[in-house]
Image (cartoon, rainbow, N blue to C red):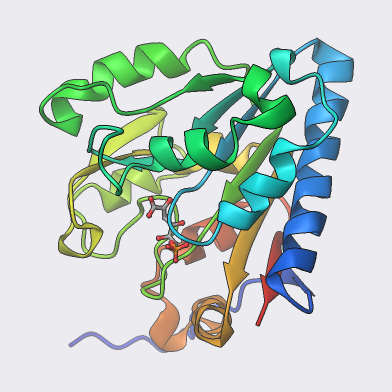
Length: 242
Ligand SMILES: O=C(O)[C@H](O)[C@@H](O)[C@H](O)[C@H](O)COP(=O)(O)O
């Protein structure tokens, strides 16, 4: 056991609390739409990275109806489970079903799953696909698991240190971790935190407590969400509802 006389520092974040998931989804979609609109106005195109999992469905549905020039917008994923889109675990399938519809059907989508047998073998193909994205992202929306992972930055993953290295140069990395289920691919920390707009979307008392514990240090100090809190250029904006 190692002990330290230096307490782990508390990290700042800015939490906006909403009454319910619908109000949160409206606010989140409005923030993301504004960031996309601003980049399209400035640069002629914009890119957006969204998370998968269960939480974002309502946000996707709301954002899909935003009056944007979606033909100038490219959507990708913060991270992906290494499964084909026929799997109900596929984040790409979730995005196609709930976001790329209505006005947003005109957006271009860049999936991270390439069809290669493993993410390690698929990495080069995925890198080539994301190389065409306009950098930095106009907006990145992160989620968080009850174990403090965000993107596919899983506690205990052998590639975690490389994935959350703020000075790392890889944009994507393969991840294997027991808690992750299937192998994964994820954007690394630097391209995510350099977005014009970086938001964390969490719902429920448990996730709020996990975030507060991670931010406070102490026994939350090993939670990967801390890498985002510690390295984001501004205090992380968190949208939460019970
Ligand atoms: O593919 C994924 O699993 C994610 O992108 C992941 O980082 C997600 O955001 C969290 O695991 C929260 O997931 P829930 O929304 O399902 O709780």
